[in-house]
Length: 83
Figure: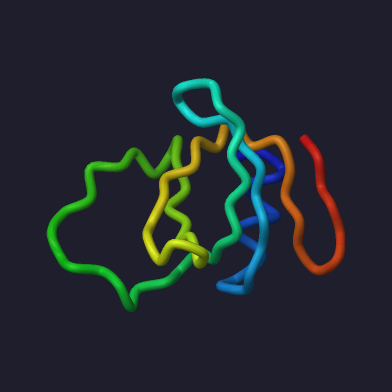
């Protein structure tokens, strides 16, 4: 687990911003929270939780998977953390 992943985990459901590289190579900025369960519809997750974080994107109201290895920056609590 990277240092930036630890910071996201430490947010404990509070809002944060993460900058990461998508699978297609595009950079993405996501404002979200972890631990959101309100919008779950059931079923089984096929996400590899060792490699990905499930983040609720508050701007679009949907869940997104963030590859832990491609996280470049986390903004939380008025601070910026870079990897």
